[in-house]
Length: 268
Image (cartoon, rainbow, N blue to C red; front, side, top):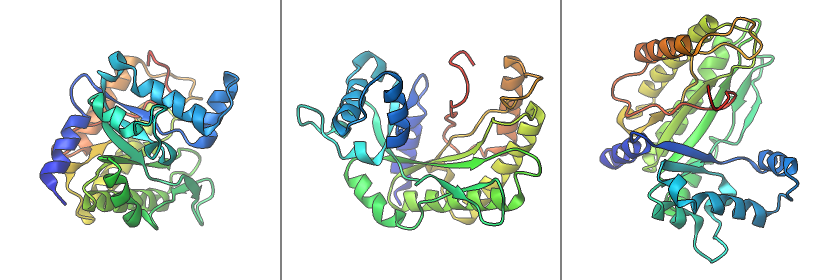
């Protein structure tokens, strides 16, 4: 592990005024998006769509890194240039989504565990060679009646820490994403309470797995009302509680925080 290199990449990922572009929709998800606009989801069409994004010179000035799907990282543009080279030329870092989605967590009804650790140590050096300098792994924690359980929080934060350690061993910066979902009818205070518990467990697991905090980026949810909650927290309350929650949970050694944007409107 080259910590100086990892730290340099992590700092670049969270550069002021820039954001990370998630272009890592699975084949199933991008098909839904293409279906909505009447476009066939062929390999060429998926490539052309992503190439269009990466060649958008003005837009790419605001992008620090691009998360790619396994299919995309190996693809070449129509003119034969590897897509990773187009991203680099635009001044952004190529990254790769490495988790293999979620599966039901045994003995924990209604809860999920993220899969993909098995062959990750073999896959990461190949991604590094292809140009990937950071990776993404998403864990999903749901709030509901009697959940999340401690078993679910522990299993998911441990898997994220294992993934992060494997990434750093391959000189790839891990984005650590323990997402507490906003799907329920819970209020902002319940979200705060669960997210605080998850983040505390996450940094404990990262410590036990000897992950260098200077060489990672955290991707958390905000403290926010559930989608079905009748009492909506104001923008000001979301901001205040989110910042307080993160100050209480995230060590200062972490170079930066990249919020996940799913589930909220552009204005939010």
